[in-house]
Length: 151
Image 1: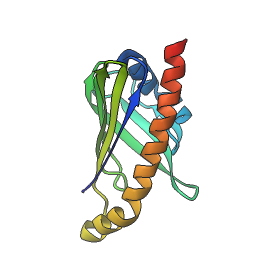
Image 2: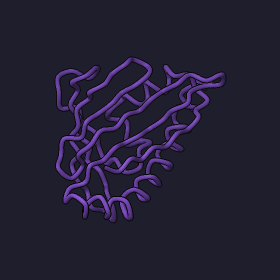
Image 3: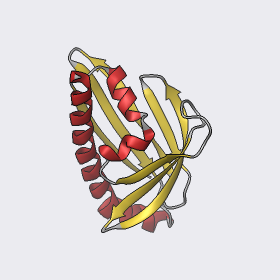
Image 4: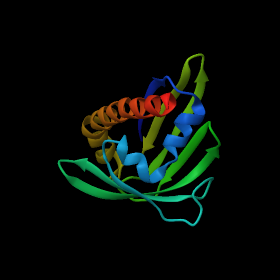
């Protein structure tokens, strides 16, 4: 199991950050590896929402990452479980109000295929790459939310 966690401070209130986070189809605006996000379930909010994200994993290789929302606390936490064998695991966006905005943490616990070999490859190659993707994505999210918060 590989854990990746990154945090950013956003100078916008949690309500603004939440709206941007759960605007599913707009996530590729800030999430650098997301090509598209589609809601597959009839519901768009709450536990049980099913999402499909076309994800650029490396060098133009695109996979389909299906996930289900497992944890939903309005304005605070949205957690997901990845449903595919290659992208198995769980993750969440967690928001915490601060004096000047929102502390946003994005974490994922990925369970790579192929046992010990998969864990080793993930630790050496995937985790550093995903950590960079998270950092770049969170910097983009910060810019988007701060622009929205100014409007």
